Amino acid sequence: MGKLGNKEVVAMQGRFHYYEGYSLKEVTFPVRVMKKLGADIIIISNAAGGMNRFFKRGDLMLITDHINLFGDNPLIGPNDEELGPRFPDMSEAYSQKLIELAKKVALKEKIRLQEGVYAGLTGPTLETSAEYRFLISIGADA
Image (cartoon, rainbow, N blue to C red; front, side):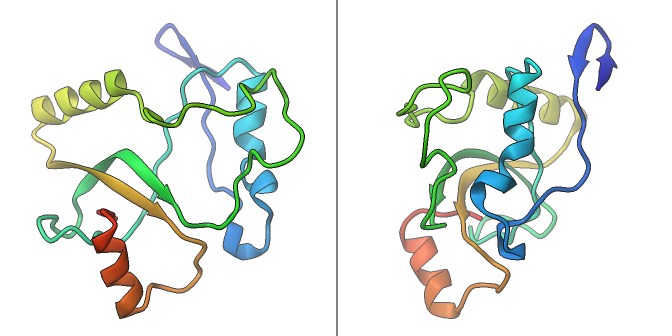
């Protein structure tokens, strides 16, 4: 925890992975802690394989939506109203304001930036050829 300019920030290194046997409640625990500490915005980075044929190796992709294929959800169970509503509206899960800001910065800095839909899968295996075709058919980009 500290300050970046005039903003209070929390930076984390590493995380728990679902494929390591942790529950989604455990995986998302650090996010819940940050919310309790007052965080309103979270920026997460991730490495994923791109499936969109227009993407190039090394491209950065802004997630504009996601497809949860975990078969689980960290919000299942007792609801903590301090963390948010029982049934959050996911129709705009990613801030359009932050997406536009990232695009503006990328353009200014001449960073190749893609936008797309992220498919969340359990891992730790890579997808089969059939799964890959399925993911593309349902609109996943990475």
